[in-house]
Image (cartoon, rainbow, N blue to C red; front, side):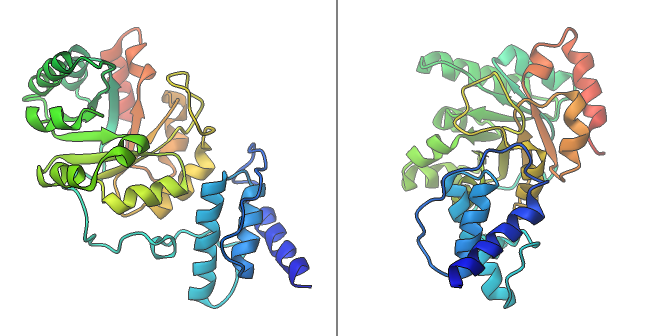
Amino acid sequence: MHKAHTFEMAQAIVAHHAATFAGFEPQPVPTPTLHESAYMAALHGCSQLGFIASDAQCLARAWQAQTARTGRFDASCWPAEPDDFGLQPVPRSSSFAACPQQLGLYAVLPDAAWVGRMARAGVPTVQLRLKSTDAAAVAREIAASVAAVQGTGALLFINDHWQAAIDAGAYGVHLGQEDLDAMRPDQLDVLRASGTRLGVSTHGYAEMVRADAAGPSYIAMGAVFPTTLKKMATAPQGVGRLGLYARLMRHYPQVAIGGIGAEQFGDVLATGVGSVAVVRALVNAADPEAQAAALIALMPH
């Protein structure tokens, strides 16, 4: 009877939320780490809805916490309370310097010339994503990017090269999950103490929980849509998932990223994220300045 009841609870979760997560293939159910019924039901239900093992585990624990907190299991109520996921209470005891809640249009750019060009075009947030292992060349390009945004009001984040970014006085650093995981606690302390802002890429619930432990300045969530830019380890997340991520991480500034073009801005912004990152939409545009102005006009003011 207990197993049958858990199965019914899992099916109720799927029935209530299948429309939000349409298009995802069911995933293998991970090995349980708890045996409470709400946890077991959510583990099976979320796996069927297409969440990978680490995210299904994260959601199942949150569903169990929600059930314990409210005193009842509710299949219709998707977990969205930071406490149920074990996120840091606000104000956070461990956190980086704050950045604006609304980072607006966020341009990810290949070199200092592009950084300056888009900053002068009025893009409020720019990121230098430099693909180079030459330390001297990296330091030069970062310094040139810091100089290029002077007087424009644009906030400059540097992808990956955190020590060089600190040295050059950049506004912030953006790290992927692997980069964050690779940093020693003392290195993270150095970055935090420098006053440099930190943005972190996330691709689902488990990574958002991991990122929260560092208390970054903003959370990037994606890839929202398919992107040709790099081989993604995770499937595109879609707008349905993005909306729920945005609810859970509502105490952070949020950046949606991944395959987003002008035609998708409305759907993406409707989730409540305060920033949309673009790469190809600007770099491949026939008139990047005009395209920047058009995209900025789509952002809430």
